[in-house]
Image 1: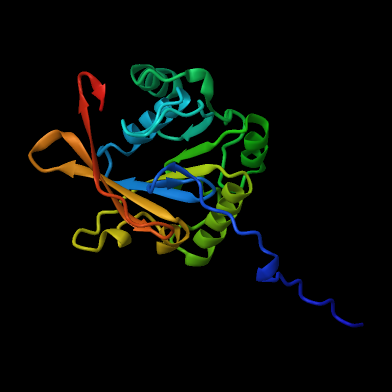
Image 2 (image 1 turned 30 degrees about the horizontal axis):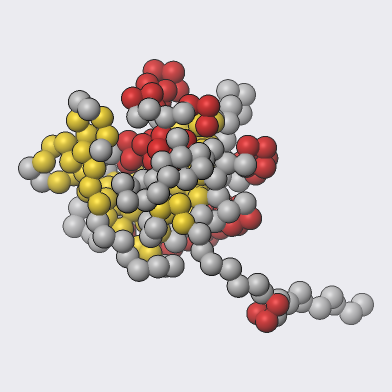
Length: 237
Protein backbone atom coordinates (compact mmCIF):
# COMPACT_ATOMS: atom_id res chain seq x y z
CA UNK A 1 0.00 0.00 0.00
CA UNK A 2 1.35 3.39 -0.99
CA UNK A 3 1.90 5.71 1.92
CA UNK A 4 -0.07 8.95 1.91
CA UNK A 5 1.87 12.04 0.89
CA UNK A 6 3.03 14.36 3.65
CA UNK A 7 0.75 17.37 3.90
CA UNK A 8 2.77 20.45 2.96
CA UNK A 9 2.09 24.19 3.19
CA UNK A 10 3.43 26.52 0.51
CA UNK A 11 4.62 29.78 2.02
CA UNK A 12 3.25 31.48 -1.10
CA UNK A 13 -0.22 30.41 0.07
CA UNK A 14 0.23 31.83 3.57
CA UNK A 15 -1.62 35.12 4.05
CA UNK A 16 0.65 37.68 5.71
CA UNK A 17 -0.91 39.41 8.68
CA UNK A 18 0.43 41.97 11.15
CA UNK A 19 0.71 41.27 14.85
CA UNK A 20 -1.89 43.07 16.94
CA UNK A 21 -1.04 44.29 20.41
CA UNK A 22 -2.84 44.47 23.70
CA UNK A 23 0.02 46.56 25.09
CA UNK A 24 2.83 47.37 22.67
CA UNK A 25 5.50 45.97 22.78
CA UNK A 26 4.84 43.99 25.96
CA UNK A 27 1.70 41.88 25.43
CA UNK A 28 0.71 40.70 21.93
CA UNK A 29 -2.62 39.20 20.93
CA UNK A 30 -2.44 35.64 19.62
CA UNK A 31 0.72 34.81 21.57
CA UNK A 32 1.89 33.69 25.02
CA UNK A 33 3.32 36.20 27.47
CA UNK A 34 4.97 35.22 30.76
CA UNK A 35 4.98 37.56 33.75
CA UNK A 36 7.47 36.23 36.27
CA UNK A 37 9.13 37.31 39.50
CA UNK A 38 9.76 36.35 43.10
CA UNK A 39 6.79 35.71 45.40
CA UNK A 40 5.24 38.91 46.73
CA UNK A 41 6.88 41.18 44.17
CA UNK A 42 3.65 42.21 42.44
CA UNK A 43 3.07 39.83 39.51
CA UNK A 44 -0.56 39.17 40.42
CA UNK A 45 -1.12 42.82 41.30
CA UNK A 46 0.07 43.81 37.83
CA UNK A 47 -2.11 41.15 36.16
CA UNK A 48 -5.24 42.12 38.12
CA UNK A 49 -4.78 45.80 37.37
CA UNK A 50 -4.25 45.07 33.68
CA UNK A 51 -7.53 43.14 33.78
CA UNK A 52 -9.28 45.97 35.64
CA UNK A 53 -8.23 48.62 33.12
CA UNK A 54 -9.13 46.48 30.13
CA UNK A 55 -12.56 45.68 31.58
CA UNK A 56 -13.29 49.40 31.51
CA UNK A 57 -11.85 49.98 28.05
CA UNK A 58 -8.87 51.89 29.39
CA UNK A 59 -5.37 51.79 27.97
CA UNK A 60 -2.56 50.46 30.13
CA UNK A 61 -0.69 53.74 29.98
CA UNK A 62 -1.88 57.32 29.92
CA UNK A 63 -0.74 57.90 26.35
CA UNK A 64 -2.68 54.90 25.04
CA UNK A 65 -6.14 55.82 23.84
CA UNK A 66 -9.21 54.19 25.34
CA UNK A 67 -10.50 51.11 23.57
CA UNK A 68 -13.58 48.94 23.72
CA UNK A 69 -13.99 47.08 27.05
CA UNK A 70 -12.38 43.65 26.94
CA UNK A 71 -13.63 40.39 28.44
CA UNK A 72 -11.01 38.58 30.53
CA UNK A 73 -10.86 35.01 31.86
CA UNK A 74 -8.84 34.98 35.07
CA UNK A 75 -7.90 31.66 36.69
CA UNK A 76 -6.09 31.62 40.00
CA UNK A 77 -5.08 28.66 42.12
CA UNK A 78 -3.60 30.72 44.96
CA UNK A 79 -6.16 33.34 45.99
CA UNK A 80 -9.77 33.07 47.11
CA UNK A 81 -12.24 34.66 44.70
CA UNK A 82 -14.53 36.14 47.38
CA UNK A 83 -12.05 37.36 49.96
CA UNK A 84 -9.01 38.28 47.84
CA UNK A 85 -9.57 38.52 44.09
CA UNK A 86 -12.94 40.33 44.12
CA UNK A 87 -11.83 42.97 46.70
CA UNK A 88 -8.65 43.65 44.73
CA UNK A 89 -10.61 44.04 41.50
CA UNK A 90 -13.08 46.37 43.22
CA UNK A 91 -10.19 48.45 44.59
CA UNK A 92 -8.90 48.69 41.03
CA UNK A 93 -12.37 49.88 39.91
CA UNK A 94 -12.80 46.92 37.55
CA UNK A 95 -16.02 46.15 35.72
CA UNK A 96 -16.37 42.73 37.32
CA UNK A 97 -19.05 41.68 34.81
CA UNK A 98 -16.24 41.57 32.23
CA UNK A 99 -13.96 39.35 34.34
CA UNK A 100 -14.93 35.69 34.26
CA UNK A 101 -13.70 32.52 35.96
CA UNK A 102 -14.09 28.94 34.74
CA UNK A 103 -15.71 26.99 37.58
CA UNK A 104 -13.21 24.47 38.93
CA UNK A 105 -15.35 23.23 41.80
CA UNK A 106 -15.99 19.81 40.23
CA UNK A 107 -12.82 19.46 38.17
CA UNK A 108 -9.51 21.31 38.31
CA UNK A 109 -8.44 23.11 35.15
CA UNK A 110 -5.25 22.42 33.19
CA UNK A 111 -3.54 23.98 30.18
CA UNK A 112 -4.78 21.16 27.96
CA UNK A 113 -8.35 21.19 29.28
CA UNK A 114 -10.94 21.43 26.49
CA UNK A 115 -12.89 23.91 28.65
CA UNK A 116 -10.33 26.60 27.82
CA UNK A 117 -11.24 26.57 24.14
CA UNK A 118 -14.95 26.27 24.88
CA UNK A 119 -14.75 29.25 27.25
CA UNK A 120 -12.94 31.39 24.67
CA UNK A 121 -15.64 30.60 22.10
CA UNK A 122 -18.47 31.14 24.58
CA UNK A 123 -17.23 34.46 25.98
CA UNK A 124 -15.14 35.86 23.11
CA UNK A 125 -12.56 36.74 25.77
CA UNK A 126 -9.49 38.56 24.46
CA UNK A 127 -7.33 37.87 27.53
CA UNK A 128 -6.76 34.63 29.45
CA UNK A 129 -4.68 34.71 32.65
CA UNK A 130 -3.39 31.54 34.36
CA UNK A 131 -1.94 32.27 37.81
CA UNK A 132 0.45 30.55 38.41
CA UNK A 133 1.83 28.37 35.60
CA UNK A 134 2.60 25.47 37.93
CA UNK A 135 -1.01 25.02 39.02
CA UNK A 136 -2.33 24.48 35.49
CA UNK A 137 0.07 21.85 34.16
CA UNK A 138 -2.30 18.97 34.81
CA UNK A 139 -1.66 15.69 36.59
CA UNK A 140 1.36 13.68 35.56
CA UNK A 141 3.15 16.56 33.81
CA UNK A 142 6.74 17.20 34.89
CA UNK A 143 7.45 20.89 34.28
CA UNK A 144 11.18 20.20 34.41
CA UNK A 145 11.07 17.86 31.39
CA UNK A 146 11.63 19.88 28.22
CA UNK A 147 9.49 17.72 25.91
CA UNK A 148 6.48 17.84 28.24
CA UNK A 149 6.80 21.58 28.95
CA UNK A 150 7.13 22.46 25.27
CA UNK A 151 4.20 20.25 24.27
CA UNK A 152 1.66 21.79 26.63
CA UNK A 153 2.80 25.38 26.07
CA UNK A 154 2.76 24.80 22.30
CA UNK A 155 -0.86 23.65 22.54
CA UNK A 156 -1.68 26.77 24.53
CA UNK A 157 0.08 28.90 21.91
CA UNK A 158 -2.03 27.35 19.14
CA UNK A 159 -5.17 28.20 21.13
CA UNK A 160 -3.98 31.78 21.59
CA UNK A 161 -3.30 32.21 17.88
CA UNK A 162 -6.55 30.55 16.78
CA UNK A 163 -8.71 32.95 18.80
CA UNK A 164 -6.34 35.96 18.76
CA UNK A 165 -6.39 35.96 22.54
CA UNK A 166 -3.53 37.27 24.69
CA UNK A 167 -2.61 34.49 27.13
CA UNK A 168 -0.71 35.59 30.23
CA UNK A 169 1.09 32.98 32.32
CA UNK A 170 2.13 34.08 35.80
CA UNK A 171 5.33 32.34 36.91
CA UNK A 172 7.30 32.17 40.15
CA UNK A 173 11.08 32.34 40.12
CA UNK A 174 13.20 29.60 41.63
CA UNK A 175 15.86 30.26 44.29
CA UNK A 176 18.93 29.71 42.12
CA UNK A 177 20.65 32.96 43.09
CA UNK A 178 23.35 34.14 40.74
CA UNK A 179 21.92 32.45 37.64
CA UNK A 180 20.75 34.44 34.64
CA UNK A 181 17.14 35.47 35.15
CA UNK A 182 16.10 33.39 32.13
CA UNK A 183 17.14 30.26 34.05
CA UNK A 184 15.35 31.24 37.26
CA UNK A 185 11.85 30.69 35.94
CA UNK A 186 10.19 27.67 37.52
CA UNK A 187 10.52 24.49 35.48
CA UNK A 188 11.98 23.86 32.05
CA UNK A 189 13.55 26.64 29.98
CA UNK A 190 11.03 25.61 27.29
CA UNK A 191 8.31 27.68 28.99
CA UNK A 192 10.49 30.70 28.35
CA UNK A 193 11.29 29.51 24.82
CA UNK A 194 7.67 29.20 23.66
CA UNK A 195 6.55 32.59 25.05
CA UNK A 196 7.01 35.49 22.65
CA UNK A 197 7.29 38.07 25.43
CA UNK A 198 8.56 37.67 28.98
CA UNK A 199 8.20 40.37 31.63
CA UNK A 200 10.11 40.37 34.91
CA UNK A 201 8.51 42.08 37.91
CA UNK A 202 10.78 42.96 40.81
CA UNK A 203 11.37 45.27 43.75
CA UNK A 204 13.32 48.53 43.47
CA UNK A 205 16.00 48.80 46.14
CA UNK A 206 15.20 51.49 48.69
CA UNK A 207 11.66 51.99 47.30
CA UNK A 208 9.33 49.63 49.19
CA UNK A 209 6.19 50.69 47.30
CA UNK A 210 7.63 50.60 43.78
CA UNK A 211 7.97 47.62 41.45
CA UNK A 212 9.87 47.58 38.17
CA UNK A 213 8.62 45.80 35.04
CA UNK A 214 11.45 44.81 32.70
CA UNK A 215 11.02 43.01 29.40
CA UNK A 216 13.64 40.24 29.24
CA UNK A 217 12.42 38.59 26.04
CA UNK A 218 10.71 39.86 22.90
CA UNK A 219 10.77 37.84 19.66
CA UNK A 220 8.39 39.96 17.64
CA UNK A 221 9.27 43.63 18.24
CA UNK A 222 11.94 45.86 19.70
CA UNK A 223 12.31 45.58 23.46
CA UNK A 224 10.08 47.93 25.43
CA UNK A 225 11.45 50.49 27.86
CA UNK A 226 11.23 49.40 31.49
CA UNK A 227 8.15 50.51 33.41
CA UNK A 228 7.36 50.94 37.09
CA UNK A 229 4.22 50.86 39.19
CA UNK A 230 3.53 51.99 42.72
CA UNK A 231 1.63 50.12 45.41
CA UNK A 232 0.25 52.50 48.01
CA UNK A 233 -2.84 53.24 50.11
CA UNK A 234 -4.29 54.86 46.98
CA UNK A 235 -3.89 51.58 45.13
CA UNK A 236 -2.09 50.93 41.85
CA UNK A 237 -0.54 53.65 39.68
